[in-house]
Length: 135
Image 1 (cartoon, helix red, strand yellow):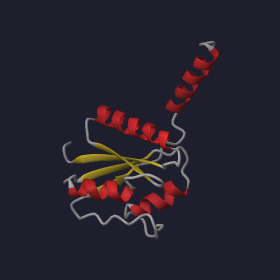
Image 2: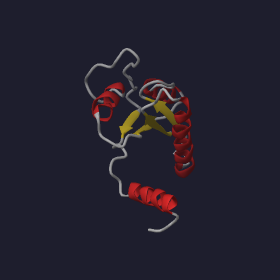
Image 3: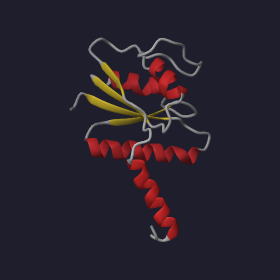
Image 4: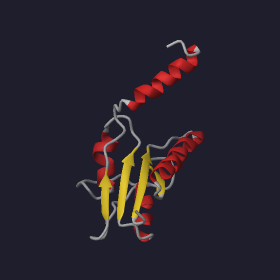
Protein backbone atom coordinates (compact mmCIF):
# COMPACT_ATOMS: atom_id res chain seq x y z
CA UNK A 1 0.00 0.00 0.00
CA UNK A 2 3.03 2.27 -0.23
CA UNK A 3 1.79 3.86 -3.43
CA UNK A 4 -1.56 4.93 -1.91
CA UNK A 5 -2.26 8.29 -0.34
CA UNK A 6 -5.52 9.55 1.17
CA UNK A 7 -6.54 13.19 0.98
CA UNK A 8 -9.38 14.18 3.29
CA UNK A 9 -11.06 17.40 2.22
CA UNK A 10 -12.65 19.85 4.61
CA UNK A 11 -14.46 23.03 3.79
CA UNK A 12 -12.27 25.32 5.86
CA UNK A 13 -13.40 28.21 8.02
CA UNK A 14 -12.44 31.70 9.02
CA UNK A 15 -12.21 30.39 12.59
CA UNK A 16 -8.64 29.13 12.99
CA UNK A 17 -9.39 26.77 15.89
CA UNK A 18 -11.58 24.60 13.67
CA UNK A 19 -8.57 23.58 11.59
CA UNK A 20 -7.45 21.36 14.46
CA UNK A 21 -10.54 19.18 13.98
CA UNK A 22 -9.68 18.43 10.35
CA UNK A 23 -6.05 17.77 11.28
CA UNK A 24 -7.15 15.34 14.01
CA UNK A 25 -9.39 13.47 11.57
CA UNK A 26 -6.52 13.24 9.07
CA UNK A 27 -4.23 11.81 11.73
CA UNK A 28 -6.84 9.29 12.86
CA UNK A 29 -7.47 8.18 9.26
CA UNK A 30 -3.75 7.67 8.71
CA UNK A 31 -3.47 5.61 11.90
CA UNK A 32 -6.53 3.46 11.06
CA UNK A 33 -5.55 2.81 7.44
CA UNK A 34 -1.79 2.75 7.81
CA UNK A 35 -1.28 4.96 4.77
CA UNK A 36 -0.11 8.55 4.40
CA UNK A 37 -3.02 10.94 4.77
CA UNK A 38 -3.13 14.62 3.93
CA UNK A 39 -5.73 17.21 4.82
CA UNK A 40 -6.81 19.71 2.17
CA UNK A 41 -9.32 22.52 2.18
CA UNK A 42 -11.94 23.83 -0.19
CA UNK A 43 -11.59 27.39 1.15
CA UNK A 44 -9.80 29.61 3.66
CA UNK A 45 -6.77 27.41 4.47
CA UNK A 46 -3.86 25.66 2.87
CA UNK A 47 -3.12 23.32 1.39
CA UNK A 48 -5.80 23.58 -1.22
CA UNK A 49 -7.16 20.42 -2.81
CA UNK A 50 -5.02 21.12 -5.87
CA UNK A 51 -1.88 21.57 -3.75
CA UNK A 52 -2.43 18.40 -1.71
CA UNK A 53 -3.15 16.21 -4.73
CA UNK A 54 -0.34 17.57 -6.92
CA UNK A 55 2.16 17.23 -4.06
CA UNK A 56 1.02 13.61 -3.64
CA UNK A 57 1.65 13.02 -7.34
CA UNK A 58 5.13 14.59 -7.07
CA UNK A 59 5.86 12.33 -4.08
CA UNK A 60 5.21 9.28 -6.27
CA UNK A 61 1.80 8.11 -5.11
CA UNK A 62 -0.05 6.22 -7.85
CA UNK A 63 -3.47 5.99 -6.18
CA UNK A 64 -4.80 9.08 -4.49
CA UNK A 65 -8.08 8.57 -2.67
CA UNK A 66 -9.91 11.84 -2.03
CA UNK A 67 -12.57 11.78 0.69
CA UNK A 68 -14.82 14.83 1.16
CA UNK A 69 -15.51 15.40 4.86
CA UNK A 70 -18.88 16.93 4.08
CA UNK A 71 -22.11 15.71 5.60
CA UNK A 72 -24.32 16.85 2.71
CA UNK A 73 -23.81 16.35 -1.03
CA UNK A 74 -23.87 20.07 -1.88
CA UNK A 75 -22.23 21.85 -4.79
CA UNK A 76 -18.70 21.53 -3.41
CA UNK A 77 -19.11 17.74 -3.27
CA UNK A 78 -20.98 17.24 -6.55
CA UNK A 79 -19.35 19.91 -8.71
CA UNK A 80 -16.44 21.94 -7.33
CA UNK A 81 -14.22 19.15 -5.98
CA UNK A 82 -14.64 16.82 -8.99
CA UNK A 83 -13.74 19.73 -11.29
CA UNK A 84 -10.61 20.55 -9.25
CA UNK A 85 -9.63 16.87 -9.38
CA UNK A 86 -9.97 16.86 -13.17
CA UNK A 87 -12.76 14.29 -12.97
CA UNK A 88 -15.51 16.55 -14.28
CA UNK A 89 -15.65 19.30 -16.88
CA UNK A 90 -16.08 22.80 -15.54
CA UNK A 91 -14.36 25.89 -14.22
CA UNK A 92 -12.90 26.58 -10.81
CA UNK A 93 -12.84 29.83 -8.90
CA UNK A 94 -9.76 32.07 -8.84
CA UNK A 95 -8.32 30.24 -5.81
CA UNK A 96 -8.20 26.78 -7.38
CA UNK A 97 -6.58 25.08 -10.35
CA UNK A 98 -7.48 21.82 -12.05
CA UNK A 99 -5.32 18.77 -11.33
CA UNK A 100 -3.76 17.21 -14.41
CA UNK A 101 -2.76 13.73 -13.26
CA UNK A 102 -0.35 11.65 -15.34
CA UNK A 103 -1.82 8.53 -16.95
CA UNK A 104 -0.17 6.25 -14.39
CA UNK A 105 -1.86 8.04 -11.48
CA UNK A 106 -5.41 7.18 -10.45
CA UNK A 107 -7.45 9.74 -8.53
CA UNK A 108 -10.33 8.06 -6.74
CA UNK A 109 -13.09 10.31 -5.41
CA UNK A 110 -15.30 8.78 -2.73
CA UNK A 111 -18.78 9.64 -1.58
CA UNK A 112 -19.18 12.30 1.09
CA UNK A 113 -19.82 11.32 4.72
CA UNK A 114 -23.59 11.51 4.25
CA UNK A 115 -26.20 9.99 6.53
CA UNK A 116 -24.06 7.09 7.69
CA UNK A 117 -25.66 5.22 10.58
CA UNK A 118 -22.44 5.56 12.58
CA UNK A 119 -23.32 9.26 12.97
CA UNK A 120 -26.35 8.23 15.03
CA UNK A 121 -23.97 6.55 17.50
CA UNK A 122 -22.05 9.80 17.86
CA UNK A 123 -25.28 11.72 18.43
CA UNK A 124 -26.37 9.10 20.97
CA UNK A 125 -23.06 9.52 22.81
CA UNK A 126 -23.45 13.30 22.88
CA UNK A 127 -27.04 13.06 24.16
CA UNK A 128 -26.06 10.56 26.86
CA UNK A 129 -23.17 12.75 27.89
CA UNK A 130 -25.44 15.80 28.13
CA UNK A 131 -28.09 13.90 30.11
CA UNK A 132 -25.72 11.92 32.29
CA UNK A 133 -26.34 8.59 30.50
CA UNK A 134 -30.11 8.50 30.90
CA UNK A 135 -30.78 6.99 27.45
